[in-house]
Image (tube, rainbow, N blue to C red):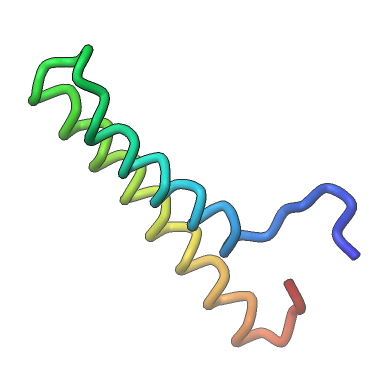
Length: 61
């Protein structure tokens, strides 16, 4: 049981959801919206890679 809830897959999913929401944040100009989307998607990819690395090493998540 992970009492701190440090599951990289869950955090990656949350970042993908945040990217979806950022794409709809019309209070920001289009360029800024895209930067925010790119940031969240890059973070999701990083976390997915971390989860893959952990699963290859045999760590449970």
